[in-house]
Structure formats: structure tokens, C-alpha cells
Image 1 (cartoon, one colour):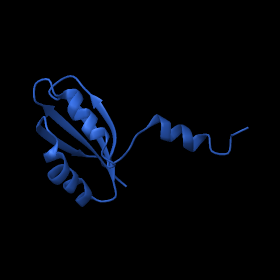
Image 2: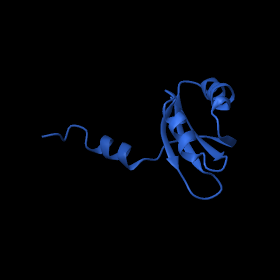
Image 3: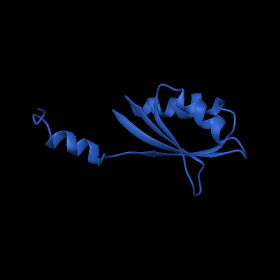
Length: 93
């Protein structure tokens, strides 16, 4: 499984519209409205790097309201939730 974070700048007033369209895509696990230099962050989980390329260059380009994207490829996951699952394995009552 490949995970990427796609940071998105939207056109003025288009955050909700863009976020809803992205959330409807099967490759997009989560969408957040964010503050700072970007308006939206999409967490993408797919099988291959090529799937990320297809999503960004073939599907996201058709989302009205996206002005610019920056894609970050995740190398390793550090998650409290994942660690809790590992350490609690077999501890169910």
C-alpha cells in the first residue's frame, strides 16, 4: 500500500466543493480543510506509485476549483493507533 498526502490550494470560495469531490474518490481515504499555505489536504492510499500519478494527473485535474497541488509521498507511518493495535493484540477480554 502506498500513501501520499496531496496538499491543495483552491480557488477562492471553493474549499467545500473541492473537498466533497475529493472525498467521493475511492483512492482518497480522508480529506481535511487546513490552514496555512494550502486549503485542503487529501490522504491517498493506493496500490502503486503509478496509481498516485493517475489520480493526480488524470482525475484531480477535472475537479473544478483546484488551483494548485503538491504531492508528498509517505515513506513510513508513525501512528499511535497502529502501535496500540500491535501492543494490544491478544489482550481482548
